[in-house]
Amino acid sequence: MKKILVIAALAMFSFANAQKGSILVMGSVGYNSQKDSNSISDTNQHSFSFSPKVGYQFHENWTGGIEGRVSTLKQELSNHTESKNTSFGVGGFIRYSKPLNETFSAYADFGVGYQNTKTTNNIGVPNTEGYGVYAAITPAIFINVSKGFGLNFNIGGLGYSTLKYDGVNGNRIKSFNFNLGQAFSVGISKNF
Image (tube, rainbow, N blue to C red; front, side, top):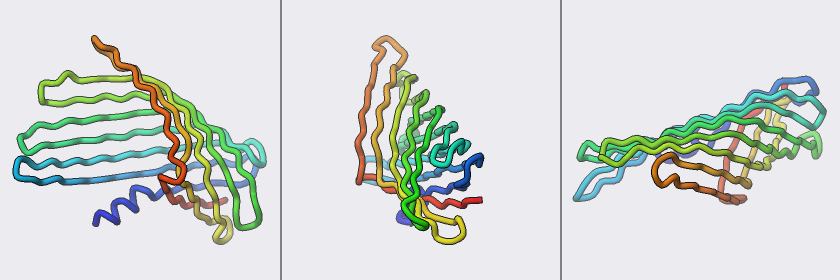
């Protein structure tokens, strides 16, 4: 069951049009559930994410549009305490795609935007909220299976983000991620 959930979390669906003047609509969905039991306590953890994109192909090789991201992570302990983290992001992206032949195309998405994260709990620790920006480059390969229907393969990318938290301390977190070859997602596309 866990393998099916992991595969579903990595699955990406998209519908794309490869012609100038077309609309690109795509997104990804992920879900993960984990239970940790030991002699002291039980911990349940559930996470969900959704990342849609909508764009317009204004040139044979270029597409521009908007992207979003919503995710939640909830942890519950057997002593009825819980913690919930909700993240939100919205921004723009630009895609450059290059056909290699009739079957294969390579593309890269560059996205930049605003992000927000909020953590709430019932264990007496103060709630936190942070705001910041992100930027990411994601290379991928498109395989045309039949009549414009195809698969997208992504094996990671490059990303940078900042978050500044409210409160007395005002923590600031800066992250740089290079996970090429450490992440994997599969997508489905249809060219209309």
